[in-house]
Length: 254
Length: 362
Image 1 (spheres, each protein chain N blue to C red):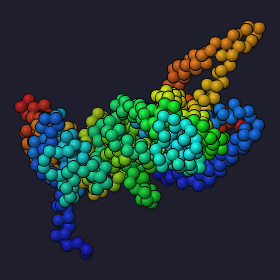
Image 2 (image 1 turned 90 degrees about the horizontal axis):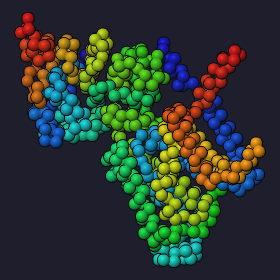
Image 3 (image 1 turned 135 degrees about the vertical axis):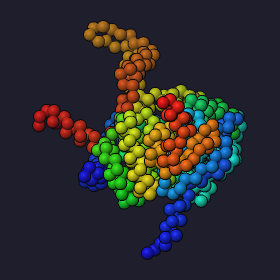
Image 4 (image 1 turned 90 degrees about the vertical axis):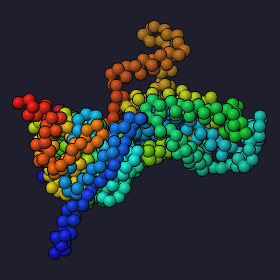
């Protein structure tokens, strides 16, 4: 055996992403007021919050689109605060943006190639294509079609597939369920679970609390720029405060 | 497996070789035509052919920025001016410089230099690309309409400089007596080279990155693309060819002055790439040919003629009226331009032929 149990355990427990006391503000308005979040390696960690809670700002700060005022962001033990987005992406921290943001006038194949922009090795590229087409057969059969001609659910699949093409270690998904039919949402979350099982850490930003907490290993609740609640997914799903905030008042209605 | 099918299409080497042979053959046919034209056509037609080649270079390299990368630049007249002046300064003989710089003598090292045409074109391209590199940092801080205004301003600045740096450009008198080096072979040689380089670039991963920047800059950055670097590189690449085209143009018309490189030049190019279809290289080439040749062909409407017993005096300026009407019709019925975003490919041609044959039932 190459690994001792301790090694395997520590490997399993390592933190992939660590946010320490992060502050972000836009033009005088403080959007994030000192949050600390740990994302364990090979876990699905969920960030919940209603509109304006600061979820997207957090994500933008992590992927380098916004410069934080203070605090630190560590990715695999390395500070990436203030790095340019394209450099962060090359480390393996890949962002599936909100609203999918696929390239509508590029073919599906070209969209996927954009994900693998830094992969020059043809053999690796071929393996990546095979992996992605296995997970998303619909993309294989339509590879020559323009991205914009896909349905909403298929576009979300394409956005996820494109992210996988860049061989991520951590995948940040910003509202993958946005604007999708419930059946498609279930499908997307099934795929997210499968990607986690393949060894990719997932940081999930969601408003669809019910579905998200079912697959989350750990979750944070963001309210007005601060973390108000955290815990394992199965605990939060029972928590009164979460129910209060998202499920129309929870038990008090009964 | 479905994924297997997709790879077969990409790695099919016989069609690749076939396409290369066909491309080579069409270049040979084009060269054959030029050889014929050079010997048999009159000076007027040859001149139109040379103009067409220069406009293809300009349109294709301009389309790279505006169409393929989606950055609304209005700078080509500036690049053209820089290229034209640079190459002209380097080919003029010291005696000619002494004779034409009557306001102020030319500054020293340049007044003595006289280089061969090929070298001057290369220098023109490099100088223009270098200016574009310097410009990229301030220019690409803004996008969309703002980018258009900043580049438009740059064009004006270059024109003002050409007017006022008298010891370098001879001011508003311009440079005269350039030797007409530009012949069919120079113009079309550079033209073929430009199209070849541009097609290769667009089909590379850099080309895909440009399109990604056009579609959604934020998503492109999220894919690990350094948008600023891509923009800067493309700007310099395009400026290089526009500078060379400027050199060719200067040695075709043999007299250059600041008033030649007004915004109208950019405007004409913009019409060409929009008519051809923003983002389509094929479209840019077709539109450059149509508009350069068509502008001349429409001259018949300005000359007196008789058809069906009806005598027509010919109205000066009628050409532009008809031209504008055609522009309007094209924009109404083919909003994406002649080619839209499609490109001519041999595969596409064969596919089209097969479909036609099927319809005919053969």
